[in-house]
Length: 325
Image (cartoon, rainbow, N blue to C red):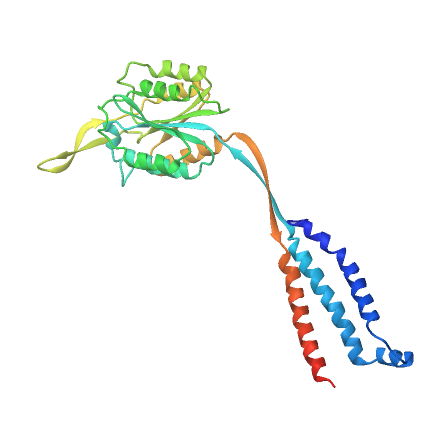
């Protein structure tokens, strides 16, 4: 037990002094001519009650003083470990991400949905977003403002960058963003459904650069094994599908992961994609700080309640004694 205002305890030693002082005054002011009468009166019911009133009075004062000291009990002790890493999400937004083999949505919509769920499970991490197709853009710097990140992710659409699949350029861009990170763990999660066909940097070269500064890269290939047709809008016939199939360059993605001591995953539907992000979520945790929180429960009420009851009892006894002749 601890006390929030222990200074009020100095009032308790004053109580006996006050009692002694009051008794002296009382004895000095009362004279009896017959000591035998005093002895008889001491045994009367009324005098006994009056004496108990003094006891009740001082009990109330003591209880109120204890309540003023704010007694507290330790309600719980919680040890929490803060876990924080720097993560860059690298998302392919090339035209092939329109493929609808992740029914009822396309690949990009499925990826955005799963990433939002992934963000809900993170705590104390700085997370950024890089999108790419023919070029690469760092859409959101490393931040702990996940609401802002989700808002930016919602606005990501196919076509905001010229088409293509610049995997190497995107990986190099993300690596550069993590270059000055001081966290113990630096991670890139790269999601794509194609093969590198744009940009000035080869994916393997970018992977080696990431390895040099201690970045781990998780690569995710999305799309069904047999590939998928790409939908487009025909002004006359409406939604149509182009006879072009998009395939994942699994070999390159596996190499990137192996070089950087990461892992490669293959997602053929949204459920599998969610499982992959959940697995990465469990893999990527780094303990950086332990803080102990102690919560205290206020106990003043446990002393004020009996003090109130005793006060009511005293008032009732005084009222009764006044009626007794």
